[in-house]
Image 1: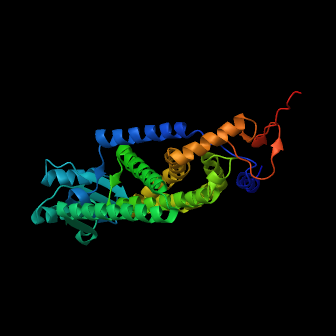
Image 2: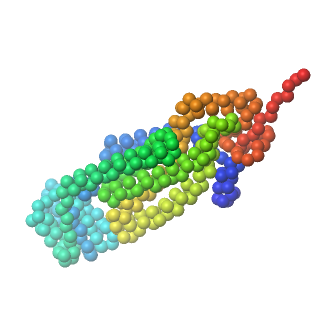
Length: 357
């Protein structure tokens, strides 16, 4: 079966996956991922860039060699107790980061680096960044995140006329953010302002995908209590399957250019800014696709089924099926269109028992 035929089968209900029905399993998977991520954050902690922790940075351009040993030796001569971070950036650039030093020492280190790598002193740039700048950036990022979350909750509650969808979307957003930062902590990636921009960007992407699915859930479940064939969970599961191929296609298409930027920025150009933002986008988009399918909608269904009205409707539908007057749902799937008697992969009408004279 081709992708087009598969997508048509999912949209029509001919083929369906019981994602909502297995929501406890997906919640356990997400819980495990969150536990691992939080463990990395608590145990190893994040690795803030120089923009956040403050310090001095020297960049040697056009170096004859990108070996890190000469830079370490130079820093050791002027600041013996320092533990510098020396990185090869691209094919002819070396970046050295260490703690704060005074202006005189910075000039001496610049001249020594130029001599060690065989370049002109003009090819060595130096920057001294105070910790107050990083604190200001962190404060503004947290403020922007708080405003973003408030607006998301407010707009989604109005648009969907349900706080449960807003709550499920926010949980999915937190899931994506914690997992992405946990990956950074676990692998030891440096968090820079570009990474923070990437974190904020993935929240919007994840929310976009979740809203698309929720819109289909609302369309399918409109006046769901006015009928006795399907439960709310089944109609929400149908919506997930109908938007599944679209979510996968959108995510794959979005990840391809991000992967290209990550590869080009990291391995070919050695551009740290490109690498930082592309890495956050790649991890966040991948986990955002997962959360919009396996976290947001199943969680919204779990919250909605706690409503007395919805709980009563679900019990009525299931009771009707047991009595032989409703529609039997096999494997938690829903089939839209004509119903087929007997056993079927989708929905089958349960034959009524004949009364004996």
